[in-house]
Image (tube, rainbow, N blue to C red; front, side, top):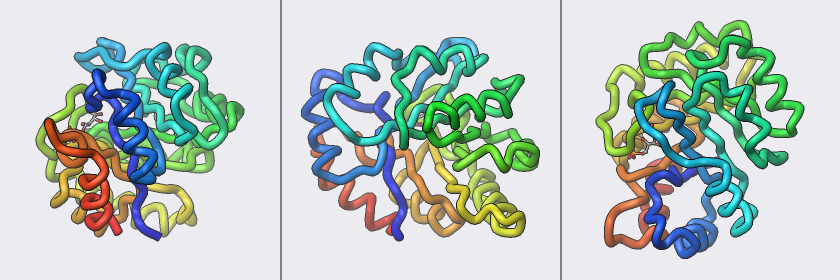
Length: 221
Ligand SMILES: O=C(CO)[C@H](O)[C@H](O)COP(=O)(O)O
């Protein structure tokens, strides 16, 4: 099975939101990635619950919530989280990480831990039974259009080996940050399963989304 695509909704042209969602549906993307930033955990503010709910009314594509916020457990109730959605919380931001992951599971969603580039993979050893995914940040979170942190490619392959050796082959690896055509190929070879596609690949000024998604699929096939 090929890699899955989760387009970064902070990179959409908001003036053409509905049109973009329709194009993503036609292109068959597996998820929509919502970058939720609180101005504390990361130095930026982005998508809030009202915006995300308005997209929920447009489509049945499963949502991929990426909470780049402090104390994510406080915010879980404000989002319309549904069965089959992904919810990622940062290891660095959640004091009671295991409890938060359980809360996500109880909502019927797939619990995921996100790791900043400087966070080692062993930081999630004690919650391996509580997760369906690991989100490896390949840039420092906060802004689109950044350059890849090169050591994160090695981190993806290290994580893949650790998952296989530990009996967690079903845990998927998602990658986010400068997932360009070239970087996506390297990330796929290293073991990534789900690719957050942003300004580096499928959201380019003046270009149609569908052919860009088709091209992106050839990189993660
Ligand atoms: O979470 C993010 C940054 O924190 C964005 O999803 C991502 O970086 C956007 O993609 P690109 O790097 O391709 O512009």
